[in-house]
Length: 226
Image 1 (cartoon, rainbow, N blue to C red):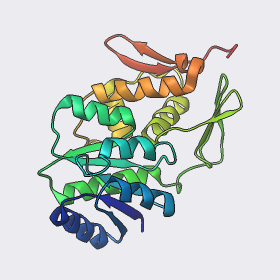
Image 2: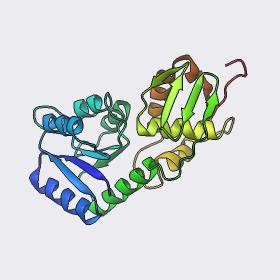
Image 3: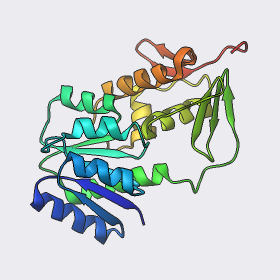
């Protein structure tokens, strides 16, 4: 059972989401606006957040940005904003998925399950992955670069883990979408580029290990001299 924070100012949608989440054996926290959402995140252990964008007081974009400063929990945007630029901006801020209204509650819950499964630690091992100055600890879900801990979103972490598990293997953008986001993901391949860009920035100079192959995709490669 996971704890899901539902930040949604439309009461009818909030109630529907809460009912479906509880039917799927999850506990639920409710927030009517961005301020309440941030307070809930600070005062509770939350496993996943379903986040509306157009909320009063503080919008979902700002909530996502501030949430990423304190947590790597999976975030699903649920919104009426359908433009690709809005979706890409959401991913740039650290969202893991983006669902547009009107939506199917059953499909949304399937996305919730998929994200929770990918964030579960049941299949993690204690083996460290090391490449150059990057050390990834799957058991602690921690990444260190040159001895310094860096904060990654869930999706950034899963991307880096996949790359480090498969050094020198070329992944197309479609393969990365399927392996990290899942087959039911509604986004485009540009989503991959946004997350890779964010990951590279956080890795600093070590981000050069993620090599772009024109018309092919990406691969992870670190020189022996680090």
